[in-house]
Length: 158
Image 1 (cartoon, rainbow, N blue to C red):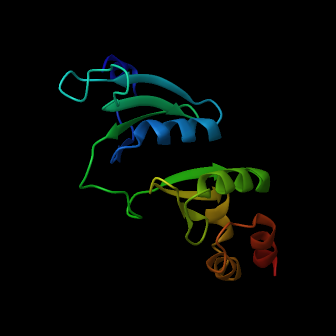
Image 2: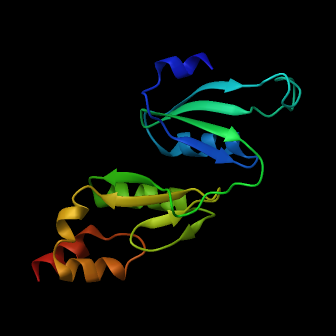
């Protein structure tokens, strides 16, 4: 794909079994500064881009980060070994991304969620590494699913 020529040297490449275009549209709807860049319909994959054809790969940006999704089919699936981190500056941002990305998915712990497509995300405040240096804040974090910044800061002060 020609779009790769303008990508940074290292970019995420996400393997979906069959719903890459649906997932990309979902992610683009949540993050600002996001857009679909290109869809690739190789001649030997489906009907070559005709009506009803599925793209093999989809190039897009997610909040400015270039990414690619693939309709790769089985046998690979996402798991917690790899996740995407969303740095948030406010509780409002934590709430927005956590609530949107967890719709139809699964809440895990400590700001981690698995979205409806199986991709794992960490929705965290940017200053989380500093806060959890305090053992009381770390203990508070371990009890949370969606992170409550005020509660973590209160625990760190106490």
